[in-house]
Length: 141
Image 1 (tube, rainbow, N blue to C red):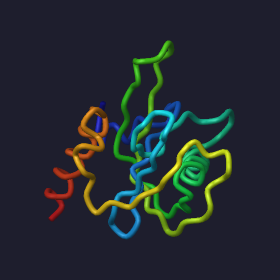
Image 2: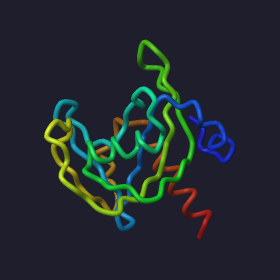
Image 3: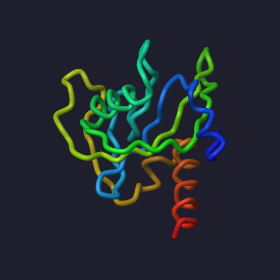
Image 4: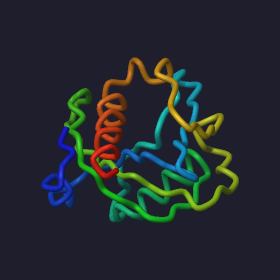
C-alpha cells in the first residue's frame, strides 16, 4: 500500500477503485449480506471505463450515492486473487443519495460519524487507510 503524494502521481494504471465516501463529514458504508460485512464501495473498472466513471458506477450501485469531488490518496495491490490487481484509493464527497439499483449486492447503507472498530476489525486494509486518514487530518489542523 502506498498512501503518499508520490503514489497519487502513479495511479493512471489502476485496475479498480476503493472508495471512502463521506456525506456531511460522515463515513458512508454498506452492508453486504453475502459477505456478512460492512464495506466501502470497491470494484474493478469495466472495459474502456475511466476512473471517474468507475467511481460513479460503484457509488450509485453500492450506496446510492451521487458523487461530488473525488480526491485520490494512494493505491494498494490485492495479491489475494489469481491475478494481482492495483486499486486506487479515493476519498469521495457524496452530494446526495438516490435509490440503488435492484441488482445491487448491498442491503443496507448507513452513515457513521465514526466507524465502530468491531465493524472493520478483520479488514486490515480499512484499518490501515482509516488510521492514515486520522494522521493526515491531524497534520492538516
